Length: 116
Image (tube, rainbow, N blue to C red; front, side):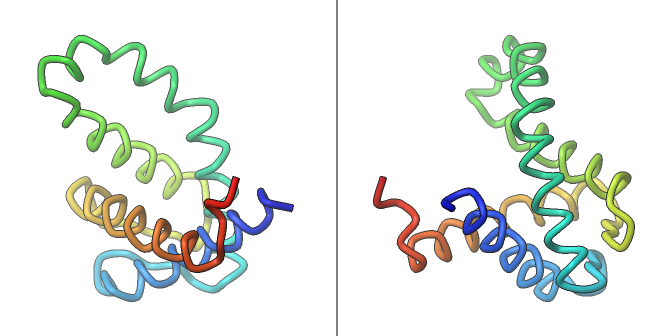
């Protein structure tokens, strides 16, 4: 049940973030946002750990700031995979990632998701 709530909250966060970054980021509807949230969950579970391991020296050298680049790359990959989700470039993907993370954490706290 917790996974479904997190996916719904992530979809809502994606919709809100796309609304805030309207000219550069586009999410067609809530179904697209749900698919996006599911794809992001899968990419974060499968691809992100591999990228973190492969870029570990760069991450150490940049004191962890390279993880923002990995997040933006995951967003760009999701934009390629999910029809109806569009991001205009790397910097917009980076901004989308940061804002969506903030909104997602606020919504998870409101929904009571951190009571594990």
